[in-house]
Image 1 (tube, each protein chain N blue to C red):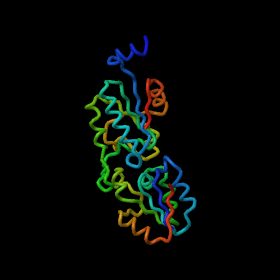
Image 2 (tube, helix red, strand yellow):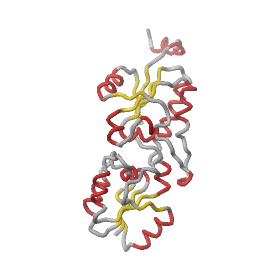
Image 3 (cartoon, rainbow over the protein chains, first blue to last red):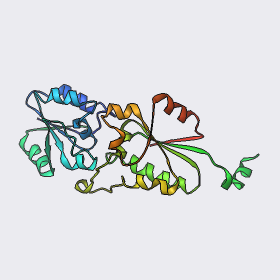
Image 4 (tube, chains in turn red, green):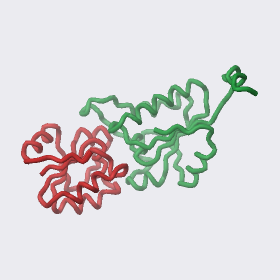
Length: 99
Length: 131
């Protein structure tokens, strides 16, 4: 399953809810304000790095760049472009957007 | 003095306005709209403070490139604020710390305040407008 999160983890609880429900081997794609979570020094960094042991963590590159965060992405996070976003959706049987 | 008299002499009244910015840019329209309102307020020669707390500190980051998401990059506008006599920019130290940010990461010079200093600044305002 592909989980998609688009809200800042320091503003809403949707990333936390997602990580609680995502099962081993699932993919988590962070877009829009959710990308702050995968940057160095973020409050969610430790949680993301722990989750990366069981989940594949992706972040949308254009959203990172638009937030001045392109150079601050945590190790172990895969940065994708819009084409990669489409591929992820196509590769997974189902998607859950944590609105 | 009646309200009407206040209005007649309105051009001489200067109030302390705080614009409180708590949202990240781009994900919602709050940051951009807040900036527009600040620029409007500046035209009325008011005593304006801009405050950035919580995710609002992300508005001031250097290196923003919005070409990929095809929205306006308004981050340069923060550097133009002193041209409108808006020179009081404050950030919340705790919000910066929680996001791994320092003043070197920001596109403008700011004054960093503790929670207590921020609370006092808010308490002394005539008007607080939140975005």
